[in-house]
Length: 228
Ligand code: OAD
Image (cartoon, rainbow, N blue to C red; front, top):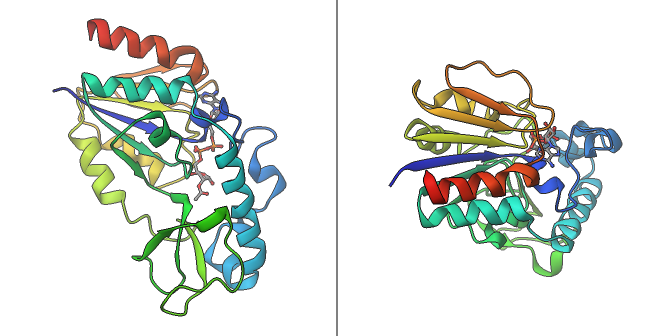
């Protein structure tokens, strides 16, 4: 089976109604990263950080996968498909994709601030100050914050290095190390980058499609299922 690796970012969930981070009107226009998405922010004001992610979680729970998520799930019938996403939502899973790696964590999960390994679901969608794990640590969202290591980078790079084709969908490619993943693809591998504001990416086999995911991904998937 041909191995396809799909790297996704906030842009693929935009048409479901979730805000991206860096577009005009994006999340980082209203919040400062250093106030809500760093270990220092957590130490300074846990309540603010919890509130920020409680809002994100409520929004995720209120939306549905869109046609791009759904189309990608269909590709599994013919390809060994791996999705590596920077998104913390669960829309790929809800659309039916079975191999989804969340590089930046998952907003529907939480873990003790004292132990990054014991991850559990967030009950009732809200984490409050005083919600303690069995080890006595305050529960925090299972999110990889700026300044924290991305624990799945090595596994993700290994998957990209084995890919026969790579699609990059809805990523601004500004946040490292995730943005560097595509460079792990072997030289002959075809890379297709779909983003209405795609930035320049160097590589021998890169095709850029400056369109929204929902406008092109379903048709691409049909084409790959019928002729690929
Ligand atoms: P960004 O907000 O940086 O970029 C979103 C990209 O999606 C932009 O390049 C848009 O042009 C594109 N886009 C918007 N609408 C689209 C659509 N309908 N179809 C396809 N593309 C569309 O989001 P990410 O690149 O995912 O990390 O951001 C990376 C990381 O930065 C996030 O995981 C998050 C953030 O800060 C953390 O919070 C740790």
